[in-house]
Image 1 (cartoon, rainbow over the protein chains, first blue to last red):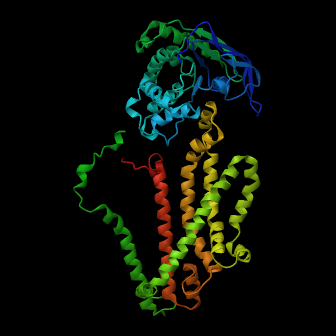
Image 2 (cartoon, each protein chain N blue to C red):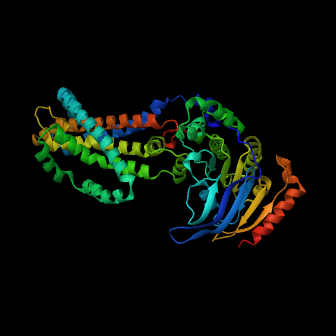
Image 3 (spheres, each protein chain N blue to C red):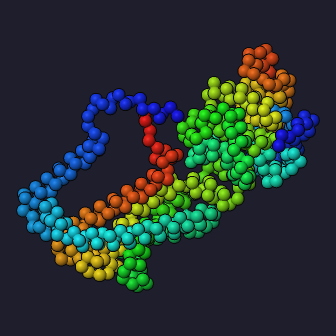
Length: 259
Length: 278
């Protein structure tokens, strides 16, 4: 099921999206965003700028109050396309009564894919995220970083074209975060997935992204965009380059205007 | 993964006291002190045996009436067991109903609390009118006493399922049965086990109360509650003590049985059942 990547094709399209909660809070207003195939787009901005809200709307976990959103030409959350886009939550959200392997198998199980097809894809995915030695461990036996690896493996097991990540490394220490950033770059090379990534860590955003979208505080609007042309695959050493420092600087300046 | 290595093994050889003795010693001390005080009170105050029988008299009553005590305890166990099964099935079903919608919860919960708050002594006569003296009434009374613990805990578990776990299931288009069996039920399990534990103790109490009020048959053929009723009426205090003690032992045995079952269900993954070494 290796999809052919067409970097000019628009995979995610959001147009004039508003979201108002039942209590009257306007989370985002007039947000328009297009994400092409194989892009790595980070949504950055202060807390409460609606970046997670936008990501959830794209996932089909919440409806927009106004505007239009489509993923690969379909409505977000269209069950015909389930497994085509995956979501990684801020917490690992694992099932504690299942082993690592069983947690990763869950999407295949819920989608009722034939059991015979699970084995190779599950092993492959576990190996990709560096979990081969832990397949029979229970979540409580794992560190925060390892739990997040399981969560990412679970998202990848359906071979999604779109990976939506909602501050997945926010709760981890800096060293673990950098290691997981490095590994996410490898995963991206292998899967060719399009990634939309929510974070408020500028270093992380600059290291990972091909494009950074800066959002303002409530109501969340898109203020600016910043393109990063450094070719992939980006290795750990990239963090030491002048190019990286410049990127961080520019995005910091943009963020200073968000309040 | 690292916590599985027993690093402290070297130290174990220093102290020679076996673990079971270490566990049993403190309660033994309490027991000896308790028996001494008991016997002293009788000797000093010169109490009549029908007011307070001596420990030896209780043991004597135990031996003398062992057959009817065992038959009665067996009867009480059966009624408790049936009541426990009814509580599990009915209580769990009711919890699913309560947790299925906010409206149903709001509509039914006050009445569940009401039922729980009404003294059994007021309900028992009605139940006896409906079901007559005997097994059915006993079990019904026991169920009424114990069901609330299961309903309250199971409902709590079912409505506590983490929102993002539900979102995850939604994303992969999980069916209702899938969400029930693969998410809500296992998520609620630790809460359910807590409910079962409380109900296990209450169901034995409930059965004995039920037998006391709605038991049939004399001569020890109607459960421990009947023996308690009869011996207290005849001032056979030694026998009464022996039957109360039997009731306590039965309660403990029942609780341990349910506890063990709960432990088996949770032992791999839940914090409450996992052994920590630190």
